[in-house]
Image (cartoon, rainbow, N blue to C red; front, top):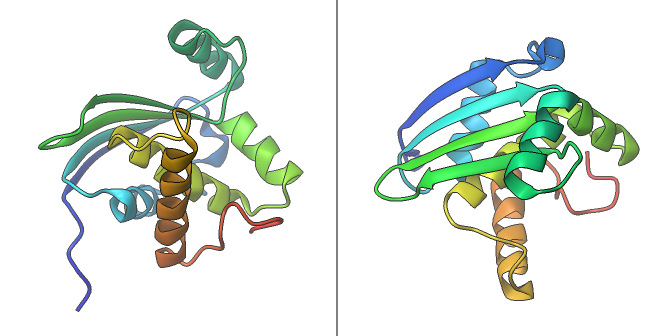
Length: 153
């Protein structure tokens, strides 16, 4: 019998509805739960390029839309975070890298969920390797290919 996944309270918002059919609530919850190590209260917001760029500029001082932003508020005893995914960026990256769009969304949701729990990839090579390895494990458990392999679908 598989281990029980932590509880998840999920709010799913589509400011940009282009991928609403691709991302039903149960799939998004499954991807996030697979990466959660503690119970979570997470909001996922799918946005367009303008909102993505504004948020990235205001909170990271980078004037472009990025694939995923993680706003983490607490990591214990409950993981509390907002994950903002920019639909046009996610779509363009998937196409440019020959990846299935759902697999790329799953990876970014896993990536953002790990960030919300304190994983990082910018401070040191060791942390980056640990985070990437955890992403690979979670993605494999979800039935997806290694997201860092060439042409991973």
